[in-house]
Length: 111
Length: 114
Image (cartoon, rainbow over all chains, first blue to last red; front, side, top):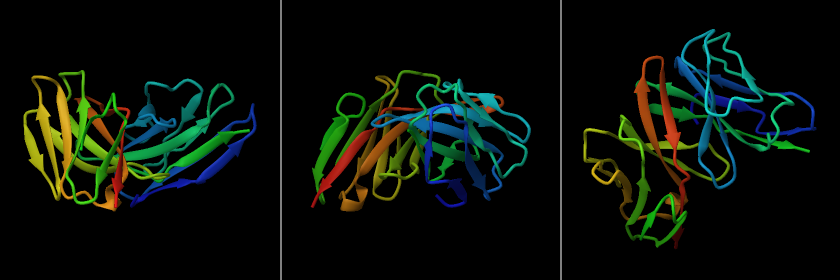
């Protein structure tokens, strides 16, 4: 997980609440990504950012929002519009062309 | 042991045996293929990649084979150890201006029997 921190590790949310997941990196990588992983499934891309102040929707962006005000930080907000938010959320950076480094993940549970 | 990653999501092998994890892909335009290892409750870790113009690439105890004719990718792990127990994902990387995006398969769970 070196260089990428995600907090909190576990997060519980009541229905109707917005929550923000933190992702910080000290790898000096330009590109950052957010993925969602459901049990027994692969990763699906939510949002990505190639540079500061720019980000793009991934395959499942509905109900999520992001910001990229600093190179080191790419927080993800799970809004109340996300109908099924319980999942494992992974933040990643990209080194060079193809090597993606992942954080340790945040497990979000909606109560 | 051998499995098709997308259709047989679990693979059990004896410690010391070789493991073969397979993956079928659909997009001929992928530029790289990458294998990741994910241990329970952790983020995926990069294992090895192969560029689409190559057929084989070797790392430490791992070999990736790419057969573009049948769109098939495999990861071979030599002398499998208990620490190799994890879920293994193949991913396709498509390069494009402004974004290099990965597309992940479902994964195969490898269990090493001591």
